[in-house]
Amino acid sequence: MVLLIPVDDPDDERLAVFRLNERQLSTRPQRRSDDGEGLFMAEGDLVVERALEAGCEPVVALVDELRPPPVTAVLADRAPVYAGGERIRALVTKLGVPNSIVAIFRRPPRTTVATLAATATRLVLVEAVDNPANIGAIVRNATGLGWDGLVVDGTSADPLARRSLRVSMGHALVLPHARTADMGATVTELAAAGFTVAALTPAPDAVDIDTVDPPERLAVCLGAERVGLSPEVLAACTLRVRIPMHHGVDSLNVAAATAITCHALRRR
Image (tube, rainbow, N blue to C red; front, side, top):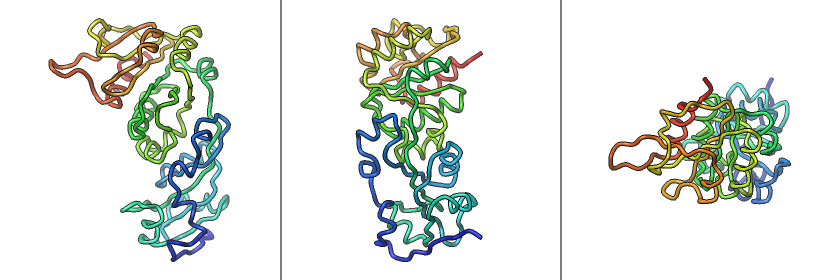
């Protein structure tokens, strides 16, 4: 029998952690640490299941008192599980339509660029993409198309942010990701490790992506919409590629561009 703890007061102090925002769940230094510091929130049964499968440590959960999802039984053996009605869960989580389960986990240790360089053959590098939804979509695209890992720079959004996790369907807990303070130096490091590092750019002198014969080890670098990649990163890349666009349109949303690029340059 699953032991659930009933709650009927949205101000119950035992639910205080669910009212925390991103900066309160984990500080900026904690989010930048590779050691696994701070907390993250997983919303929905699929994301919670993937967090557990990834070995993340649960702290507490809040579930639908009438229809707790099956994963509740696994969580209840490892952490307190509170159960409340829709009104309670909506007020606590600030979601208009609350999920049947929301859980708090400890952030897991993060891999490093050096480890990815030694083990991967397909990497996505992201510079200055600060929208968590875009990061989540990039992760989902890369995972679905068989790429091995992600590297984000210090100005990009957190792959374990609430929206990133929701949009990635929890795959941000599956796809290894590293964070770098210097993307230009990381591109140089990967090139030295045998990667072809391709910059995605609308520049007219870039190679049409349809004509590229995908190399054995490849990293693709994408930048923020409108501004694109920094001059330092562009200079460090070994190849420039572009997606052919209809006349009058210069580029796509970064998430859509990632999907096209990951498919076009996937392993053969």
